[in-house]
Amino acid sequence: MTKAAAFFDLDRTLLRGASGPVIQEQLQAAGLLSSQSIPGQGLFNQVYDIFGENRLFMAATKQLVRVAKGWDVSRVQEACAKAAQHLVDLVQPYAIPVIKEHHDAGRLVVLATTTPYDMVKPFADALGFDDVVATRYGIDHGRYDGTFDGGFVWSKGKLEAIKVWADATGIDLAESFAYTDSYFDTPLLGAVGFPCVVNPDLRLQAVALVRRWPVIHLDAPDGVPKVLGIEPQMVVQQFFRSELVRYAHFDIDGVDNIPKSGPAILALNHRSYFDIIAAGAAVVKIGRPVRVLAKKELFDIPVVGQVFKALGAIRVDRGSGSTDPLRDAAKALEAGELVALFPQGTIPRGQAFFDPDLKGRHGVARLAGASRVPVIPIGMWGTEKVWPRNAKVPSAWNLLHPPLVSVRVGEPVELGYEDVNADTRTLMAAIKELLPAEAQLRTIPTPEQLRRSNPGS
Image (cartoon, rainbow, N blue to C red; front, side):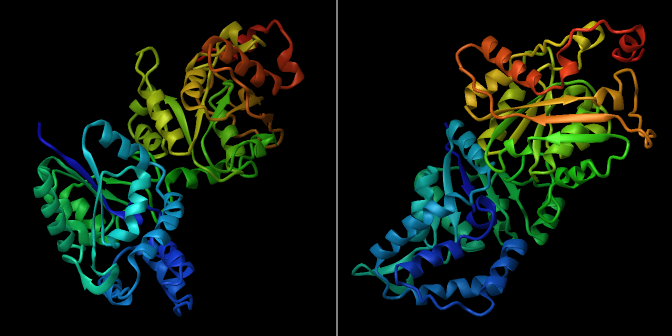
């Protein structure tokens, strides 16, 4: 069987920015590096985080081997072990699932970086990398001697170092993957069978377009583009602000129950196509993207489908029996994101629309049982008055007397994780408790109400 590997660059690829400031801080704390700041260094680091590598920056980086001359290697390793704890916090959220996928496929996962070996090895170990290809400093009697042990692992030098490593380990580069943000890693990307451009600088973006290399962002799901570091959903969310939607009056409460960071499942009742906008009016207040499970029919509509994918929605093929949606949702949760689901699956129609006892499917309970993340119930009411089920568009002209839309976000639901039926009933009861008193009453709908609750009637 052919042996393959996946090579990951460090700065602006695996990490949100550069590793240098974090490592520098620990080297200063260990007394190895002067604590005196360099004029303009903060601005320099910001420019690097946004635009990536340039020759001037890398020329300065190459000279650090002289700065390190005389440093005790064991003290450097000890300081960088502490730095590793902080670097792990900077790892892009979708990097960990990608690393896991390569391990599950039997590939070796290798950190390939210009950053010196002793400074990144603890970080690589913390993330479960199989090996590290990095710049090595010469050592004499336990101290760095101001020379390189081998070449400077950057640009063509990185490719040469990887070729040496691949020959020694029996890895076929034609069957391997490479992930990087830098134009200067173009030689490496061209040498592997599966190049992956991550958060590219402007020049690499152009090369990727010409050579048709896939472009991804490890801080967002596959297929979600980013412009200047901003994904489309964060722009669209701004249009969901309650003050901008003039044809509905919002009453929103409990938003603080949605975590400002970390994974959580948002479980919402479903009454109208307007539910997405109503939920968006609440979520925009916390400033986080949300991955929504949406039916496949929306993805099949020309242009609309591409928009949904760009917004990070997860495709659901109802009735297919596929576990892909839950797997993709679990991956988003593993990446620390918010995932929103409608446990009812679809908007109830006819008599079922007026049933005060909400009935849900098992998807949320299964996902919660597998991920063990908080499940946040959200109850919405009045959205059907803005956009009835039988209407093709919302009543956007109702500006003088807009309907009241209630959005209530509850505290996390306590689930048992042993019986999906019991957990689903517990969840739906929690959502029901968030609805107004009129939602709790069993009523006999009028013929007109029944007509408005059925599509196309």
